[in-house]
Length: 338
Image (cartoon, rainbow, N blue to C red; front, side, top):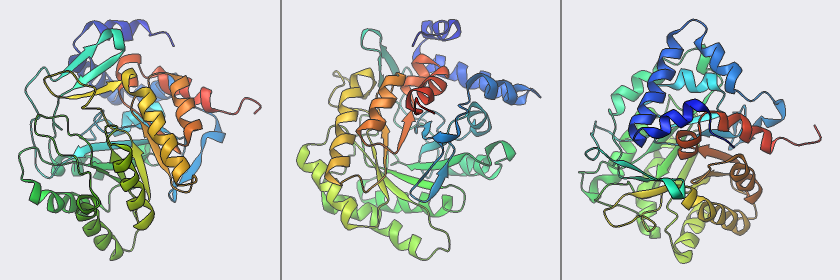
């Protein structure tokens, strides 16, 4: 898919600056009386066969935005108008944190990838809550997921309490949760890998959910750097607990050069598809999977769905190839004979 003139102009800028420019322009479009209509006409998929039910939630189409693209939920109205089936806000942490010093996103131009060393910059839970509470008619049919991460500066022993705090406060305002147990892209890494570590994080969430009238699905977002044995542990936890699915994968710290961070983009594509295919086969396609990581082209999205993903979450693909990727990807997964 060829980049548009606008996307080529953004590509000249540093990666984080380019993304901030795009988000600012989307905000301007959202304030213009016909702006949301224009976003919809230019980008929104229109095929009704793209609708689906996944973990009990209705999605108008299976292509969404992964965490990190709009971490604070500032552009929910505009992203809904563009036509995404869902948006993951976050990774959300209980208190504001600035992330690592800039520059924290670096392009690997030859590889069509990014090195993300941002460390979950966030304006905090209260800011996000205000944005989600103000959902308008433009976001009525947009599914919103909440990706929960760890505060970089907090002690590992406090992680379960932090996750539960965000989960409890956001429970009534979002449609599903993704518990991020992958690399947080900062120098201080935290990747739960054992059964005991995973259960310590998710069991308090199950306990809280059991006492609620409304049911919110809970998924785990995993690292592409897990060994096969560690991946098998995740699958066992999925099968043996009330987890509703898996999101695979986050950025890869193992692929990153010295200096930290996580690789996203085309370098991650094959590994992401491989992990999704493995989980789908091991679970006999009985559990929903959100495929993410390395979805740069419409063909990548098609292959991810064929590997067993129920939904696909985009991030770096939109940053580097533009919003047009949504409509082109939707065409790639729409049945040809319809």
